[in-house]
Image (cartoon, rainbow, N blue to C red; front, side, top):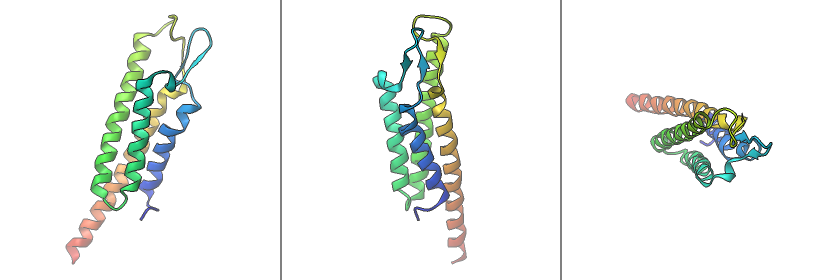
Length: 137
C-alpha cells in the first residue's frame, strides 16, 4: 500500500534532501559567491545518503519495521548533518573571509527531520493497527 500517508511524508523528505539543496545555498561567502552543498564532498555524500535512505524507506512499504528503522537512521543522519552545519556556522561566525551570511540551505535537515518524524509516527500507527487486528483473530 504505497498510497499511505507515511509515503507522502517520506517523499517530501526525499525532495527536501535530494532536490532543494541544488536550489538553496548553505551560506554566502563574503565575496558574494553562494556556497552550495556540492562544493564540499562530505556534505554531498551526507545529502545523497539521506536521499537514498528516504527512497529505500519508500520502497520498503510492505515491511513496516524496516521502514521504521530506516527512518530512525535517516533522522540520525540528518541530525549529524545539522550538527556539522551548526558547528561550521559557530566556528566561522562573524565577518571572516569564509562565511558572511547563512543561507536557507542550512535549515533543510530540520525540515527533513520533521517529515521523517511524521512518517515514523504514521508507520508506528499502522503497526499498532495491524497488531490489534492480529489479536482479534
